[in-house]
Length: 263
Image 1 (spheres, rainbow, N blue to C red):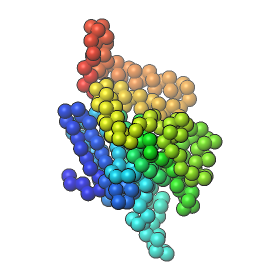
Image 2 (tube, one colour):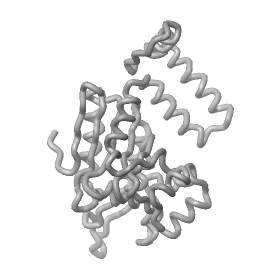
Image 3 (cartoon, rainbow, N blue to C red):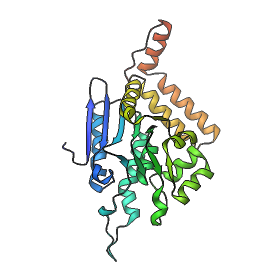
């Protein structure tokens, strides 16, 4: 399908899909149209057999969150933010978390508000050295959404999460890495190539195992130990019947590199 607010590039030879938020004049802030196109882009990537996705932004920013110009502030007809979240942001975050393949955020420039939490909803977050993260919600009297109140305490602890959310202070990339908010910081010029190399690496891995790892790790935040042990057992049983498990064992015995197919 034609896209106006994002770009979708799918390399069938490497099974890598690169989705680029493409409203650079607005720092790639979200509109309802961009939400719809991003959902369609994820659908297209999965349907065409992508085994890893890179999500990034065009221009000098990753994503500045919600575009306020896309909302109504007319008295008596103001946009219901709860409905906006229910219809657009929450489904996107749930979709990214549940994608059965790895999703890499390549954060260039500012990641603010829902844009910051969009990056944290991906499986691995790479940050350009000049990038920054800001929970800007408090600046307009709101609470972090798009999973921010879950992702921040999980990654950096309650004290730092509350500090960032309550002050709305900007966190630079190097500090974000030291705190454990992102996986890695790379030089600006190397960001997309580093994200693509990582995506190629992950696309060659056993995709079903990666999906199961994602599921298990995320379940651990609400499971008891007994529930988590049972989930590990069930996932291991399922994966033990997969092609990639058999291939991995054969490659180990034959002392060669495995040829995983994601099944």
